[in-house]
Image (cartoon, rainbow, N blue to C red):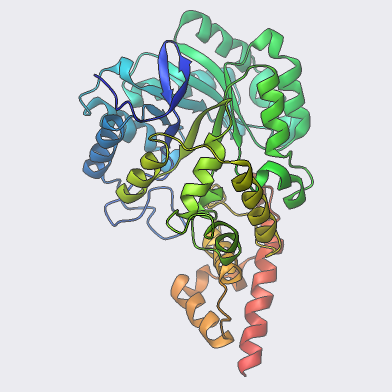
Length: 419
């Protein structure tokens, strides 16, 4: 079938021109109007709205989006199956779209090679395909070199993936990067042997120059991008909107960007930034709602690259956002479920939204909004035990118990001010 010619494409995978906008199947729509990765909102038992997903996938394909990224662990393990069904029902042939999924062997029980093989075969079955276009080693760098070796080297998983590529069962091999710079160094130093076909990095106009300011262990996206471009390794972008933080209204961002184009949304600016770099193959957006899908497609149909003036404004916006001292939570929900029932992302993002509001909010109103956002008292910050189990799962390396304790203290101070 013929795709909409308006969608910008600049890279090819096995002869397929890749859409600059890609679909990240982490936040599939649910029957209650939420999204299926949102443990924190209490929708973990809600089913995926397959009919809505079918319509969305068909709309994306009709309008030029042909890159679909998933994982065995997304949406409580349901993402691959639901996405596979939607693609199969779209009316498009298997050769018309690109499927990316991952070796998400996070748990030690999944480290053995046999377990990795079962995960791969499970992905093929769930997605209804006999090959994967783009296969990723998932979240390389989390846990440092020790964990990287256990997950991919000592167990033979990387060599097995190379064999899968030789067999054609995967067509391209890459990795998604979070965390330890030494692991990224290893991947670059071994590129001549592995021949990475692509790499996924967190890239947006805040992380471009300031990731290291957010966390000293982070590498700036500009450094990652340039090293990958230097080796001609195409980049897939994750978190172009920082989990929605660059899309939701924020006065610090709006002050810099609205004067340049009053009609452009903040999401529009975030997507244009990422698309303006030639070595970017696709920019993934975890779009739950049809309105967001339509808006994001329009941004790249075709892309209007950022000018030097606009890049400068985006850098000023990044600095202004950092000055708010927000918590770098992207609502990926990897920290959930909390063993003690806390709404971890809800607590962290509530604090961020108060900081991002230009309105001077009274203590009474903040407390009311907090109760509305997290209506169940047992899910609020005061019930954190500080166990730290969540920290190991956070790609942003946030010290979650420390931040939760700080928020609990802040809420306590607000209550005391009204006593």
